[in-house]
Length: 362
Image 1 (tube, rainbow, N blue to C red):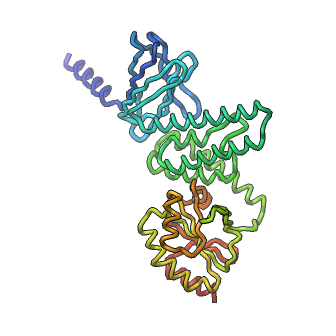
Image 2 (cartoon, rainbow, N blue to C red):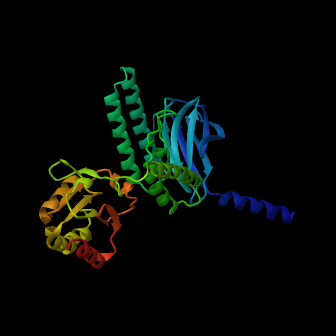
Image 3 (spheres, rainbow, N blue to C red):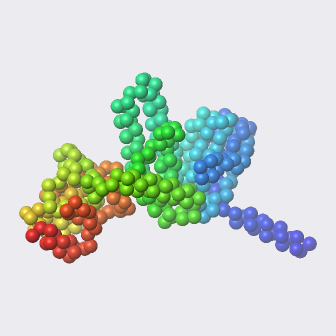
């Protein structure tokens, strides 16, 4: 008898310690309605359970979620998706939905982000379908596609440690039209993967993303080898300058170019302009030095104000989406490179840079 009580106590303790995320769902005007709870198993849905709302249209459900392994969970009713959730251990999410798939939620920041990205993609898909129905207006469709692509890039760059980035990277209008279809998108996949691995190294979603990232990198590298030597040994950057006109990095007329990525909102980086870059520019610009400074992660007005107030005399451009960071595989700013003789070189300290400039700009 004593042994049975101990076993029962152990079972109750184990059940109490099982990691959970709890869902409180209310479906408007839907008493006794069947709700299917689905778990995203990497790339397919797996049905966890089918439950019914009470007489007031509410139900409560707990999903097992391990620490460091958030889960994508979807609620369906009669074939209609009621809500999409990204749940962490300990989450308590409250969802208000109707039978048409419109819902609001609270209690989970990642679930809110997931809802926002899904709504943005639904709007994009609807607009593309509208344009296609009007006779395939190719120019407008291309512009809409680029707009949404840039919006996705901006989201991924702005939320590097959220698993919501993964479904964004896999968005596709159909099986033949993924949003991220360019070979160079492998750089964005790699940047996202490296960031997510620091937070969720054991997540099945992150591990699946790693396989896709490696596949894309291999395809990109194969194409690069196939194309042979390129004219440029570094990614091109074409961004608007202070006058709003685009400035191409490849067209900067200088013997040596310092490519500098920075954020105007960071005091230390503004000081670097004054204390390091200005003296370098004053000494070496007459000999053939130019600086191509790319401002990222900043408000455009604030950037222009800093450039004007500091009277920065070199080429200043503005990257609204942060795409240039992706192309150079950078996770943060500041970062600097030296371009000379057609090659891109990393900068090893101010003293090393001065020695190299003395060598190049005799």
